[in-house]
Length: 301
Ligand code: GDP
Ligand code: MG
Image (tube, rainbow, N blue to C red; front, top):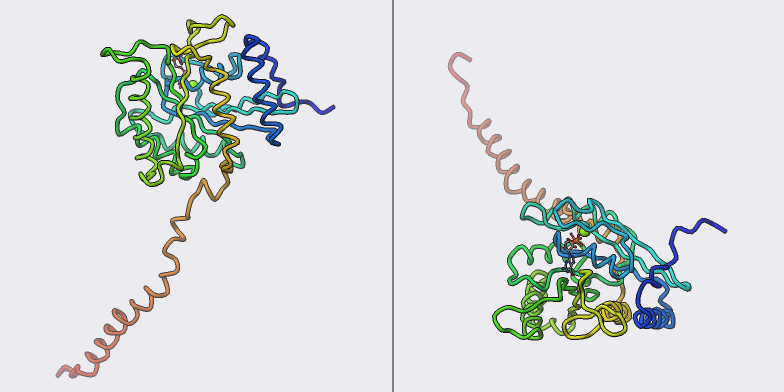
């Protein structure tokens, strides 16, 4: 047998039985719909919990998590298979460097994704952040410019640090709804999704708590303050995303390079040249000719 590049998803056995059962169900649901591979792209700013979320989904420490800036410099794809189904998760470096969206990081990600099809995009941020700013909008815009607006049909907003006590006497639900609504508004603005189209781009929001101190239910599953086990919930939302009837985003050369700026005005070149000839060169030629005719010979000649 040929050497296997994709490892068996053995870590699924690390999950509590209740979680395992739900995950296996979701995978067979995908297989029943003839989906045998799922490729998930995890993207966002630095330090928001992208790598931790990848590790939580796989169930083992597969990518490096760091509390401080120096992060995974390159994208990493982790592939795991289970009974004929393959899960690919791509962890990426943070898109923001020195207060700006880094074109270099974006370029590295785009190159890495060449010829891959994205079935789900996890746009990660923290639940415990209290405002969105222009930088968030720039991050969304950069993703949209890179992969096209359609990518948001395959997107899920993932909010980490979900085990929190809301400030200002707000209930957990109120806080969650305020935070997700302001972030979704920012995504719609950054992606230039009009109010009219907002419905067709209904982007779901998932909650995640990667901390080892996450509360658990009686079945030993990690739960949110709302009581729901978040790992099977997240995988469920990803599954729904994959089966939502919209095609995955194939990252090909055309998509990455976009319309070639050098080609854009090419059809106008003959017209511009003709105008130049008629309006500039012709009059100058005539003027020179007239001048030559008018010229009187100097007396010394
Ligand atoms: P990345 O830069 O987006 O990949 O973020 P990391 O996954 O490396 O996480 C950055 C820091 O936040 C690490 O110290 C993680 O342990 C921590 N962290 C990530 N997700 C969570 C979470 O859901 N809850 C808590 N409490 N800490 C988290
Ligand atoms: Mg990381």
